[in-house]
Image (cartoon, rainbow, N blue to C red):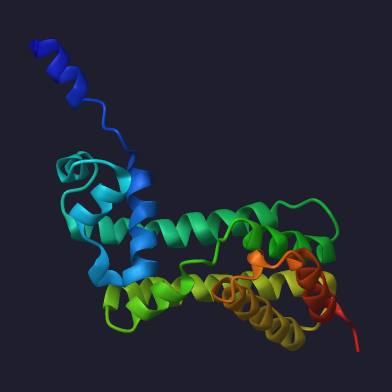
Length: 191
């Protein structure tokens, strides 16, 4: 093989950094943090473990990126999109609920929470991220017109309900959208 072909092949990793991160999240959900192994992830991606080092210095670097991805992609980006929603406040809440379930955005929350019980860095990210979710949810309910205390309570129920729905595999139910719409109606009802 010519030197040019070797260099070309070496410069084109078969999986992206995000592929490694998302597969690490899958492994975290299936096996816990101790199940995040380079060789296992590489096999799942159909790669050799050497390709890992195109993207990460070591496993700790990958773990740090898993936390960052979870916080920023699966929380901050979703909050930004919801904040930019141009419809009525009640519809913003429903739209976000449907999006979170449709995209399985809370699928890894329970695994991150378990990891946070035994790891300081994971605990810090988990607490900060959940706090962002609670604060944003409260803001959404305030935009609907609920007083601060009611908005805070409804926001907490909103966040914890969506986190719980991921572990109940709601999306497998053919009626999942109607279930979310009923939950939305209860959360936004005025008594």
